[in-house]
Length: 321
Image (cartoon, rainbow, N blue to C red; front, side, top):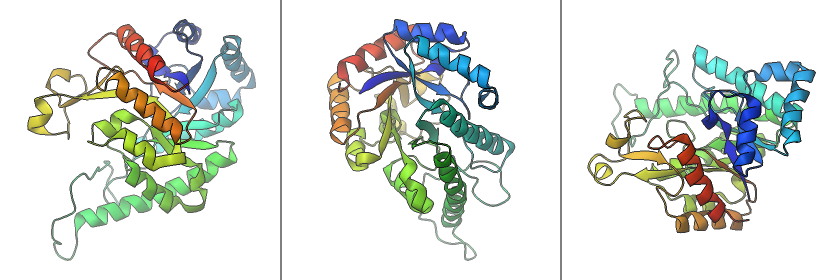
């Protein structure tokens, strides 16, 4: 396994300065955002790089001159919701697949998206409660909403999976994000079922932090996924003692309200200890994954520099070489 880094953490600094920082940390690969919600600080327009051969060549030369690879292009967003945002995200996601092909990048990282709950609605609706209410006037709204959402997801994903493959993308690594239709192993398998023949291009971006905060065990998930681990994020989470015991894990407070939240994203090693991380990477390797581990630093309790240094030290000590 090799260490990569999600570059959004560096903010709006010049592209070349970001690359030099990456090298200074002893890292030789980057995961760059090209669409969706991300800041797209270093690829402000995938469409521009697609259409301008000279700009694309200059962009690639800066990476090559430093011996830095692109581990993946990230385009995490919500292309499934019937709204201006959903349509914009769908376009930038398709653009990212085209750009990946032109850059020779074989993996894109993204989220499944989440539709509205019914036709005519425009707000994503994440159903997290057990389906247990009785029908009203012959309709169970939760059953109908889930049916509608998976039908919408199947339609978009069948088209996109084929489109990505036609542009040379070999792996679509779907991040199991809470608030997305695909948020665990079961829902990932459901997506593969509805996509059908082209689901061979679908795998999981195994981000352990997202499973931790749902009460799942990422090591067990890695075993269950087997060869469907397409990418791995190095990101930790901490269940906050005393707070989660009272209020559980369905947390809706803003991420910057760290001291009041029942869980937080933290620097690697500040949630799970180093022994856990060693076992996690060992099991991923045992299941056949020997690709990149991409550090995603989202700890708001410390400076960016402190969070990066803490996480890099932990990951370098833990990943299976």
